[in-house]
Length: 74
Image 1: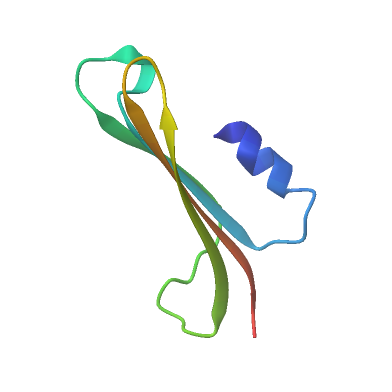
Image 2: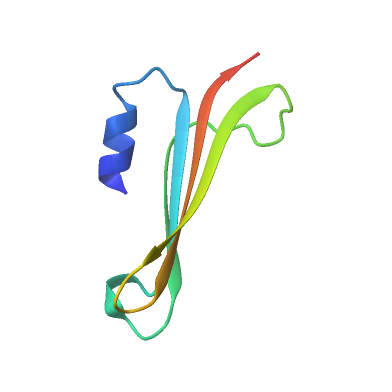
């Protein structure tokens, strides 16, 4: 997650949020971790926010990865 946020520093963006949910680290109970950098105005309609959701299969089960990237307001 930290590497994904570091890669977005090279591009001109204003905010990013990465969320991973599932059996992290092979633990028996699932939980979610979130990292946020910058601003993400979810309540503003004019804001251009790119969103991606992707499932990842591991030996422990399925992890869900969600990424929000705030580019700029129009």
